[in-house]
Image 1 (cartoon, rainbow over the protein chains, first blue to last red):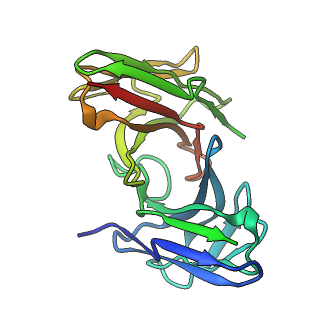
Image 2 (cartoon, chains in turn blue, purple):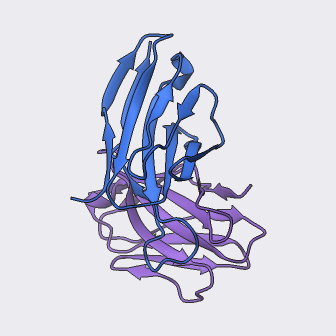
Length: 117
Length: 115
């Protein structure tokens, strides 16, 4: 089925370790983004991309890195994990731009629960 | 930046009754979209309903409807005939139609449905 695939679903890291959260979509969406969800704070934007080769920072980019070499993939890298990065991470994609019919909402991945100890 | 405010961290409703979740937002733009997303315990984010700001008619999806008041910058969600499966966290979200695709989310309302 078409959608956004996130892996892994769960991960435990030790402080200082690095890892990559994978995100892939097969809907040919131009726009992809990463959010973190923390209790009482809703979803906060980490990084986003409007197309292959184009990325930009969101509200909380520190400690994270992204790249977009293809339309389909948008991995999120934690460079040196810290306990403050314990969170649930969501990848989301959408068509880019203004009115494109009904297809202007986000499609979310199933999330990754990350614990840094 | 736009802000989205959900002032009710928790709400509860009796099964089969009606409940309204509140959302306000702050923007200087005139063209935008508003959304309600549902997040059940499975963690999956599910689109419930969406509203285009240039449409005056309130959106409706089965038991879910919105009260969109553009001048007041208010976007509440009404759930009629509440069911046990409606228990979830609900997020209100804003997206500009002109300045890219960034979504701004509220902090969420946790809805409990009482049998």
